[in-house]
Amino acid sequence: MDEPTSGLDPKERVRLRNLISDISKESIVLVATHVVSDVETVADKIILLKDGRIVDFDTPSNLIDKYAKGKGLEEVYLNIFGDDV
Image (cartoon, rainbow, N blue to C red):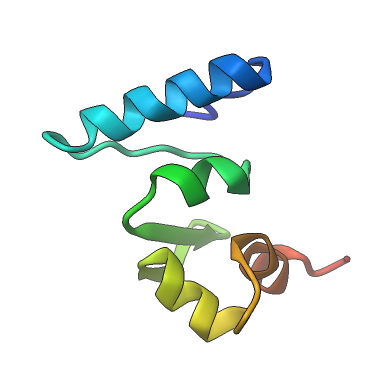
């Protein structure tokens, strides 16, 4: 799914994230998104891509430990992709 919650109101975002989570119990679900809060709530593993190459592949907690110790996935994202922030 590409940006599945884009344009949804908060209530529908939660409903869709719950649906994705339910589906993921029996299937592999791939979600491409920049919405870090969506990733935090549904992802068991994250593939980080930059310029078409895999930067890292790990669990959310391991990525936080590597790139933003004591913070969150948004800081991981900014540390890896925020060249001009």
